[in-house]
Image 1 (tube, rainbow, N blue to C red):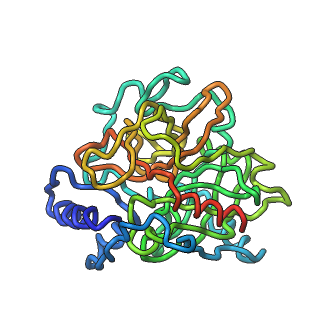
Image 2: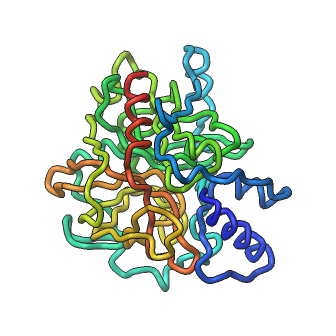
Image 3: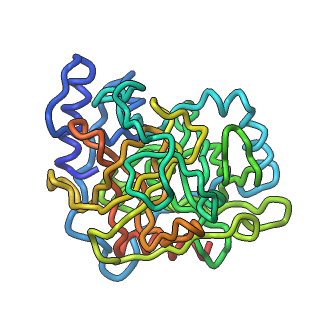
Length: 343
């Protein structure tokens, strides 16, 4: 995360442990927070602020996941129904700001007309987005977590976009047992599971958990001899798009009033970070932990479920649980994508 965000986050953790919450503190709860809750806070490197891309090359960090048949079998065997049910949201978005309850959650969260503005409703219109968006299950620091992700167009036909913190714990460890379940719905896995082959994050994320670059790309193994794109299709992706556009965000939030069993969406215009802590944009959205990594679309067609991915769910501020922030897809995000799609 950025140096200023690191200071806010450190203060937030202290007040979380003591029961008080500062105004404007960030709830960018990456896996490090889970570890930090039970051991001393580790130092955070200063973020590389001036460079979106280092001179003369890309700034992408990659990691080999389950490449061999034995490794893939291990991952698939690891995720029993019991482990999936027990996995917790990786980002704990509402831990510092309080948990949404059934009584104070938006009344329209369960249903909305496709295309109507909403800050958190169940997606019931089907279409491509219901196939390409899925849940992610992974292990980090010995803890099983859940995130969200989406299939994207790629040369290798096996690529998903997600949040960086759903792949790597900032400057810490890479995730293990990483698997993608497209089209997940109430425990059903209509297209099966696709295990991770290679993982990619931006250098600024890997070095210092810079929230401006909280993006991850994961190249998956084939399943039954078929590529992910051949099974569920894919969404388009774009970089350097105009800011402030009408946006749809999707994911599988777990914390109340949601339960992780349904695809939820938000829609409306995005705006700049009012705290000026990041270059990210905010979308009115009550989705909770578990939605991290879910896709943001512009030029989205509710009738077909097709759109162009321009960001992913990333973080919330503790004094504004109704706005989700996502990283702007610029040159560094494009470098991560270009490297990953050729893997």
